Amino acid sequence: MTDTVTTPPRAAIELPVRGGAFERAGSELIDGLDRVSSATACAKLHELGVSRTFVEGPRPLQAGQRVVGSAITLQFMPQREDLASGLGQEYVERHTALWAVMETVQPGDVLVIQAYGSKFSGCIGDILARYFLRKGGAGIVVDGRIRDSGRIRELGLPIWSTGVTPHYASQSELFPWAYDVPVAVGGALCLPGDLVVADDDGPVIVPQSMAREVADSARDHEEWEVFSRHRLDEGARLSDYYPLTPDTREEYETWRSARPAGR
Image (cartoon, rainbow, N blue to C red; front, side):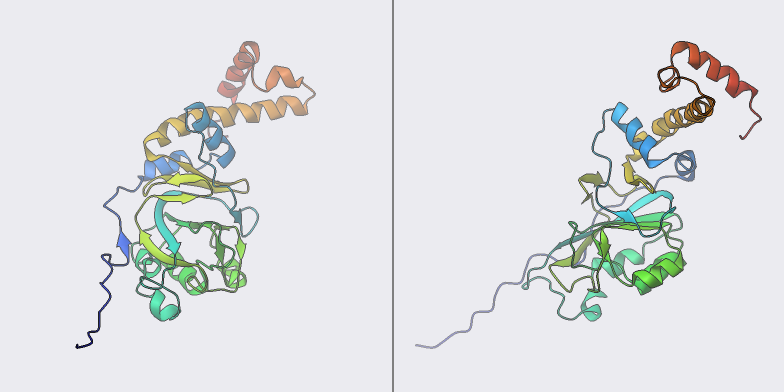
């Protein structure tokens, strides 16, 4: 009887996986949300029936950071040695979705990364952050950790993450798998082309199809909050000015019409 050597079947998948074509949010939609806080965007989406928009977990690397932009996406998946592992460090990673998504960056993009809140995967480091910024990227939201945090702070790139780690991206349990695909980040769904509004309160995902309605509603909301703060600072009663009553709404409209344009 002759011994035979059986070759394991080749996995029926090629990495990196790339999703289908998508349309980025236009500058008009982005500009419409430029002065809208993440808190207001989140509240307005809730009023419109979409309740899971807050990306829970990621915090700004530096206080005072803010970004509004069109989402591009990167998905990490659990490592499986017959398909993908990080044993070769950057020499393996350069052929993954992590390197591939960097070549798609356009000015104003916000990179949104699904990493399951991993404490041991440094999804973005100094070199990739520099390249992203050079290509015009506006900010990064990572449902996981980053590395080289000191150098990234020096770059001034707005970034939200769950913390820092010395690990490289595929050193532990995850591997950069796919890009231009839907991702789950901090309990929220983000589709390529959705809008991201992020500030000190955290990131919020605004569906592209709802961005104009959110912007219009939010603009009025934030304007009357300016008026309410002014009146409360003068000693007015909270229940009269937050939220506005029909009478104080009329007062607000008079106040707004008398304000200099652009203020």
